[in-house]
Length: 162
Image 1 (cartoon, rainbow, N blue to C red):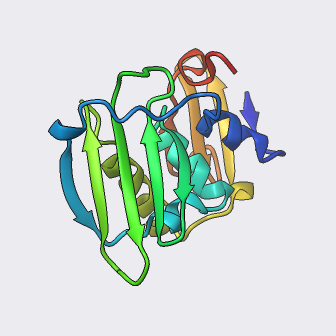
Image 2: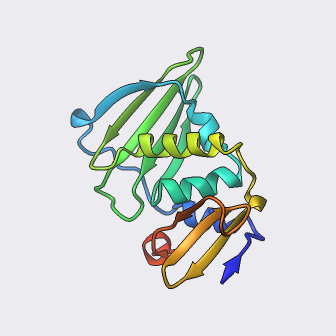
């Protein structure tokens, strides 16, 4: 079966996990690094970007924390409250950003790589994506089922609890 996304809710259901919370456990043991990938740009990518994030960086929930001088993109595994987490902090007036991440998965690295993959494809809008569902799994594809495609995680692991 081949589906074209007729609603932005496909990306939202695959990507978001608003009921979950961010838990920065083991903060002292977390890896720290710098990045030039602006967290506000990743957080505001259009629905095409969200679809790519779901395919290339599955099972990552996020929310933004904003105060007067700092924007923080907080990442977590929605199905594992004690799992991996990451934060990317953007301070006013800087063009490098602090990344802190902990766990088996480096969530910021995964999300950042997915974003760069989407940009390398020309930042396609969600209308250019489709889904093929078959015995070999569910695949997200760009422009045509035989075009670039990515296998999605099993729906039960992505949408559990939603």
